[in-house]
Image 1 (cartoon, rainbow, N blue to C red):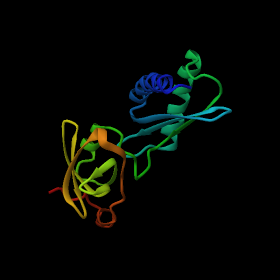
Image 2 (cartoon, rainbow, N blue to C red):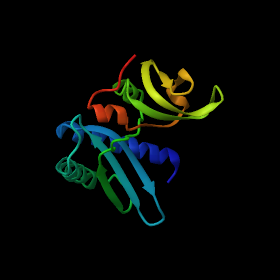
Image 3 (cartoon, one colour):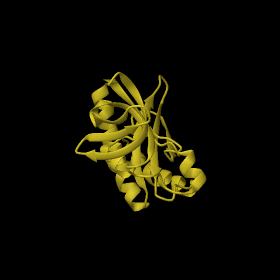
Image 4 (cartoon, one colour):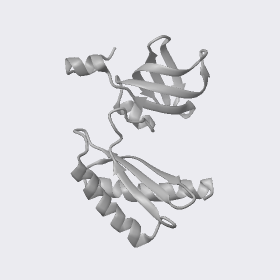
Length: 169
């Protein structure tokens, strides 16, 4: 499948998944399609503040499957997977960085910034598409969201052991 067609399909499925997510009172985090020679895997990640349950995933799966099958959107055979993004969830959008401001995370950039591509520290703010990040070794660095190769939350053991939130400066 051509990249443009795949992106268009993901957009269409995301729009459907957003509606199903609203109806089920969960947040749509991300949609991805993994292709193989035989079939595809359609992964949909959902979340909610208190965490998603197996029941949330099951309900979401049944509802979205009804719509996808009725509209016959996904070509060929596919496996549908619905899950939580996990405790070290990936950060996909600028909105994710805003939502998790102050949280411990790891960011990998597409190109070096101050001699470094990988940063571990705390999200310190978002201004437009510019992310302010407090790296453990470099201090405060800023980069545009478009320069991010991958980003995800990290378990903050200090926070977990104390049972509180990470400190914001």
